[in-house]
Image 1 (tube, rainbow over the protein chains, first blue to last red):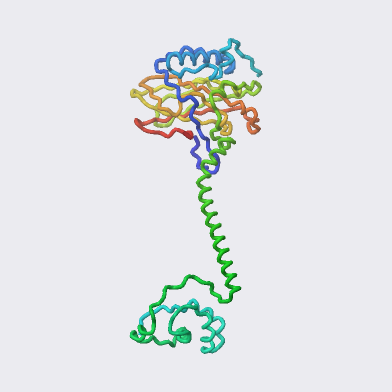
Image 2 (image 1 turned 120 degrees about the horizontal axis):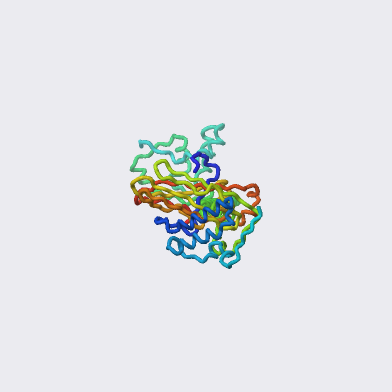
Amino acid sequence: MSTAMNFGSKTFQPRPPDKGSFPLDHFGECKSFKEKFMKCLRDNKFENALCRKESKAYLECRMERQLMAQEPLEKLGFGDLTDGKPKAETNS
Amino acid sequence: MGGLWRPPWRPVAFCGWRWSHRGSAARAAERVVPCLRPGRSGTGGAERALRRLGTWRRPSPASELALQPPPPPPPPRRPKSTNPFTRAQEEDWRRRNKTVLTYVAAAAVGMLGASYAAVPLYRLYCQTTGLGGSAVAGHASDQIENMVPVKDRIIKVTFNADVHASLQWNFRPQQTEIYVVPGETALAFYKAKNPTDKPVIGISTYNVVPFEAGQYFNKIQCFCFEEQRLNPQEEVDMPVFFYIDPEFAEDPRMVNVDLITLSYTFFEAKEGQQLPVPGYH
C-alpha cells in the first residue's frame, strides 16, 4: 500500500476473489491436512507442483465440513489429479 | 423639455458619421438620410436628420400627440441595404451564419455527450486490453478447468503480511515463498492470532508487486475484503487459493518477471461499518 502522492502513475487495483472469502476455520477441523501440506512444502523446497495432492486433500476437507462451497475438483484446477494420474513432473 | 432620453439614432449615426466628418454639418445631414431605417414613421426625414444633429427641439406634448401616431412595433429584422443584389447576398450570409451556428451547437452538444460516454467506454477499453492492471474480463471458472500449466516458466511467489498499527493481531505467512508455474492452482497459508482478551474483527486487502503482474494474479478464494472475526486468544489458519494466468507466459512485458510478491494487510473493522469492496459490481 503506497502512501506516495503520485497521481500520475497507475495504481494497483485489487480485485475481489473469484469465489469469495474462505470462512474461518475456528475449530481447526482441517488443521491436520494443513500440517501435512506444509510439511510436504518444506520437504520439497516449496515447490507447489509436488504438493498438489496435499492441497487437494485440504480443500476436500474444507468442502466436507462446510468451510468451503462444494465444487467439482476439475473447476479448481485439479483435473489431472482426479483422473488418478498425478502429473508431478517439473522442469527445474 | 423632456428629461433624459436615449437617442435612438446612435448606432445608425456611425453610418453617416464616417463619411461626413470632413464635411460640413449640413452635408452630414444629407448623407445621414439614406442611412435611416425605412419604414420608421415619424414627422419626416429632414426632421429626423435635424434630431441627429442635436438641434431638434421636442414639440409640446399636445402637438406631439396630435402629430405622432402611436409608434408601430419594430419591424422584423430586414437587410440593411436597399440594393437587391446585396440584399440577396446578405440573406445568403444570414442563412450561412445560421447553418454554421447549428453545426457549432451540435458539436458542443456532441462534445458534452462524448464526455459522458467516455467513462464506460474507457472502462470497456481497459477491460479488453488489460491496461493499467485493471480487471481483465473473461475470467470464468471454466477457464481454470481448461488451462494448461506452462511448465517451463517457474515463478517464485513470496508472501508478506502487514498489520495496521491499531490492530493487535499477530499476522504472518506460514511459508516465505512458493514456486509455481502459470496455469497451476496453488495454495498458501497465513496465520493470525488474536492475543487480546476481546474479540476483534479485521478486514484485509492485498497488493501484488510487480504491479503489471498483478493483472495475471487471480485469487480463486482467499480471506480478503470480508470481515474476519477472531475470538480472544484464538489462532486460525487463513488459506489463499490462487493461480497465475497462463497468458502471463505470453506477455512480452513479463519476460523478466520471476518474482511476484503477495502482500496482505489487515485493518481493524468497526462494528457495523460498511467498507467499499473493490470491483466493478
